[in-house]
Length: 79
Image 1 (cartoon, one colour):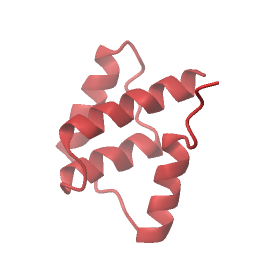
Image 2: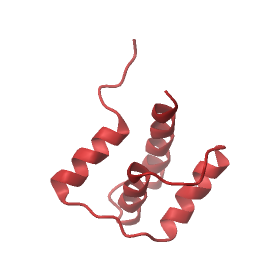
Image 3: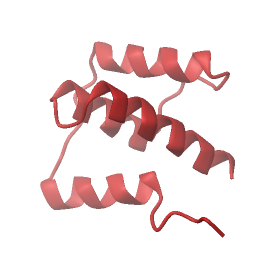
């Protein structure tokens, strides 16, 4: 099968531990909530999504990468 070697949640979890990364809730959460809402999902962000949004806010990842990873994470959650 074409299984990815990692899940977004696992990757983010390791990143937080290694970098001692913390999330500051900002307008970016509204942005991510809107994306998940538009894709027909509930608007509650999980820890992985919150970290992805914060990475975007701190310019660690691009907006395109954020959208890609959020989408991948949503698919992984659905199985």
